[in-house]
Structure formats: structure tokens, C-alpha cells
Length: 518
Image (cartoon, rainbow, N blue to C red; front, side, top):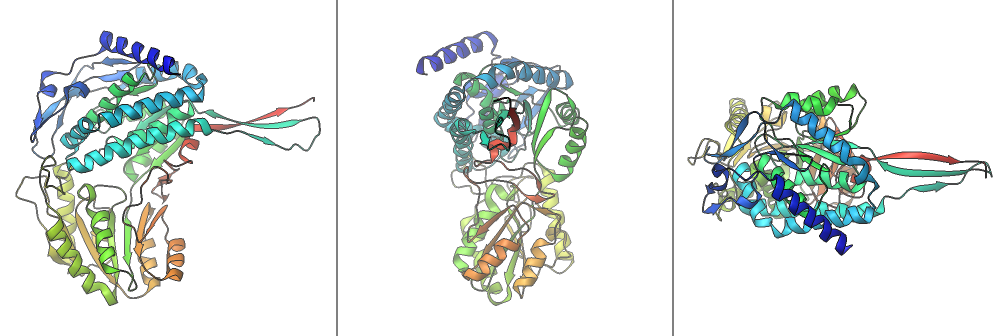
């Protein structure tokens, strides 16, 4: 096995020397805060069939903290997307026939390289996404853990033997890769949302075409460079970055090309519905991780200090820009005032807005001004209907994409911030009286990704956990994501599950074989 990996690594190095497009001066020279971006992992081209390819045009990638241009990346279009699909399809037969043990070893090598490069990968994430460097480092390790997990799961794709009703027959069940998977990912976790999908796909024996978010393509391309270094064969991992203008056409190609067998998408519910319509024409397998509107319920029996700590983590991680962030706080009447007071003090004492490269920063910028405007709109609407600003409430003086962590009280269910996903640092608190009322408010949504509640009543814990209409429940916990756990939602929050032992099933077909004449 060691010699096999050595041969693959040597071949990959030779391929890079022949085909690598050097990073342009604009990318290599960029400095963010006190840190220079790592030139060794910066790539400007798409990755198609193991080759770094240019496109007819390029688009700018910007630092959301300053608006400065980090560099320009190939603006791949329909032609490049189709070429990537063909490359993935061409590599599929050999990759699927590779013994699971060998696929596992290659994924593990990719994992090791990610861990070794964690600081450089984190700098890229902070530069293009804005999140604090410490959070970015955590994302890289979380991202790498999916490659490690699915390297192990690759060797555990078991079939079955079913007792037959006829004595001269045997019934066998095989699990086989679905084929080419199109992977469409968001900007808020530009590394982890890729590996959570790609790790499972490659472990199952599928090949992939990744379309990263236009705001954060550099992380996807850096992963491509490390995949090459790990010896992942040409065509197995392809990347087609594109601008916002090209995204609809590229997305349509990936969802309609007959060579693509599977779509996995993380993003808004509205975009997911469009992709589902495209995929319906060729009846593709789909996984959708869509919008959330997470409730966070604090019952009278809760430990308030722990609830406040959980609320702070659940709401303000990545400045509130995660699909499982709490969007609505429901606090029971008996402890409402105490919770709001302690929550406000924690926000003011523990959160610090700043550039992600500043070691003291806990809250980076929002991804763009449009995101800031949505937060402002939700606050304005709530205040106009009687809500009170407890702390925060306005843009931060650091720049147009920075916003103060905000807490609202006297919130009602008629306000926009309790009806739409804010995706920003806004925490609205609704006061309730009974458990039944809280459950009704929490479930009054057409989405159901995550939900959280704090209680020390064992009977209540069972009741509420079972009644919340969400795919993931945090009981006395504000953060629930882990590589071992199935991630996904119900209602219009999506289809399928990612991570865990269930994640690889999204990329496998079940084949029944009837062996007769025995």
C-alpha cells in the first residue's frame, strides 16, 4: 500500500509540474491583516480532469472585511462545466473499480495534507469569508475530519444475503456507486461543506464536479491542489468556479447533463427548488440541505447560565451566518427577564467585532452589504411593531459589512425576524407561558433543520425532543454538528442526510441479484 501511495503521489507531482497554472501576482501578493495568503495553495483556474484550466473571463474574489480584491479566478461557464462532467465520467469506471482499501488510503492521505496545511487553509477561509481565524482553523479541522471519517466508511459498504423462498435460488444485495455527483456548495463554510459531500461520494466510488460559491472559490481550489498532492486520480475531483452571473447556467448544466447521476446542494430553499426542477427532467438522485429557522426554547426549569452560554454559541458563531444558527429565542415567562439580562451582558462582554485576522475578534464581517441590509430590515420591522433593542442594533463603525451583535426583546410572531431566516447577528426573544405554546410557535414554519431547548425536567425533555419538527435537536446544547452525526432537516429544509454512517448511502445504489438454478 505504501508503494502504491508513493507511486500515485509521484505521478501527481509530475502532473502538477506539467499542468499547474502558477498563482497570479495579485493572488500571491495579497496580505490580509498581518498574514500573507499562502501562495502554494492559491489557484486561479478551474480544475478539470487533473488540469488547471483558464476560462474566457475571470471574476474578482473580495475580502468582505475591507472590500479589497484578493485576486481573480477563472469564470467557468457552460463549456467548462460540461468538460468537467465528461472528465468525471471518464474517471468514474477506474475509480469505482479501485478496491475500497485503496480509495480509503487516498482519502486518508488527503486528510493528512489538510491537517498539515490547516493554518494556510484557515487564512484563505478568513480572507474570502471573513470569519475569525480561530473559527476558520476549527472549520479546517472539522472539514478534514469528514475525509478521515469517510476513509473509514469506504471499507464498510456492506451488501446483504437474504433467505430466498425457493431452495434453488439465492438473493444477493449489492451496493454500487451512483456515478458522477455534482456538488454545489455555499460560502458560509467554504471548506467543510465540500468535504462533507465529497468525502462520502469518493468513498462510495463516485467522482465529483464541485461548483463552489462565487464569494469563496479559493478554498475549493486549495482543496483541489491538496487532492492532487494526495494522489487523487485526475478527473475524480473537479472544480468549476464561476461568477454570480454564470451560476444559473452552470447550475443548470450540472442538474440536466445526462452523465450526472446525483446532485448534492447546500443553500437556500428557493435555489434548491430551482435545482430540483432541473434535476427532475433526468430523474437524478438529490440531496438538499436547505434553509433553517431554528428555535431556541428556554423553559423555567433550565439552568439559565448554561442556556445563555449555549445561546451565545448557537446564535453568534460566524456572525450568525450558519443554517443551524438560532433564529428565534422562546423564553418562558418565569425566567424571561433574567435570561434577557444575562444574555445582554454576555453579548456585551464576550463578543468583539473586528477583522477576522485580529486575534481578539469573535465577530467578523457579514459576507456582503446585502446581508447587512437584511439584518437592518428585520430590526426596523421589529422595532416598528413594538420590539425593544436591548443591545446593538446598528452597523459597526469598522465598515459597511460589519454589524453589532443585536438582542431584541418584546418580540412577537408577527415580526419578520420570527418569520424569515435572518442569517446575521440578530437575536429576537419571544416570551411564552406554556410548553404547548412554545411547541406551537417553534413548529409554525415550513422549514425544520435544527432546534434547541434547555430544560432540566426529564419528562419534558422527552416530550419536546419528540414533538419538535426538525431534523436535529440540541438538548441543553447550542451546537450539535459533528462528523459522527446525521446532518439534515425535514419539511422544506431538505432531503437526505450528510455525515455519519448514513451519509455514504446518499451516493450508493442498491442492486438486487437473483442467483437461480442452484
